[in-house]
Length: 216
Ligand code: TZP
Ligand code: MG
Image (tube, rainbow, N blue to C red):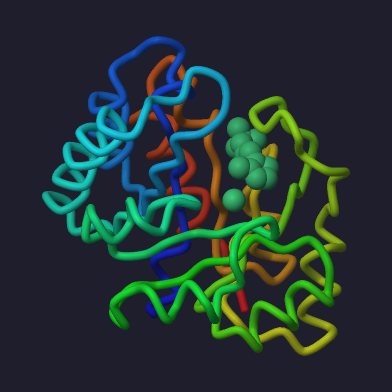
């Protein structure tokens, strides 16, 4: 996996756009320079299976136009059905080792972790990258745990975790650079783009901020 793809990792489902068309919001985010996209159809108002698949197909096609990887959250069957470029799983899901057995080998596997133990386990299970967070307080995820802060990333690096890392939770243009300076390879975020008045401009500002940071 190219860790550069994690630089500006946008996540969105149909219920994160404040009522706007998800395809339009994604189009703008792509124009603004996101480097990866995750389809996360989850929580209140999430679409049922078939609708989810239909929207997933459209969003995947948009990503393909821009040569940006299309990752599916949680739902391994959906990721396979959509021929996604990857799957992102959490601690409540099957371990990466098991998910890996079910998915085509070209698919990237991302795992959400909060602690050093979870990170070591995900690495041992064959994760390709780690999502670390929540970094800061967020209103987007209802069941979000306490933030780990920049120290959460620094600690993982100090403990010898070498996998690509993307920070998540409460990230926007004001704090994105610090995440990379702390040792992450990029930032993943929902509302800073999905609820922005101008998603393209929001993505572009984030991208130029991140292009100016020297990471690890
Ligand atoms: N996992 C940890 S925090 C979070 C997820 C999915 C929500 C991130 O949303 P936002 O709007 O970027 O804080
Ligand atoms: Mg999950």
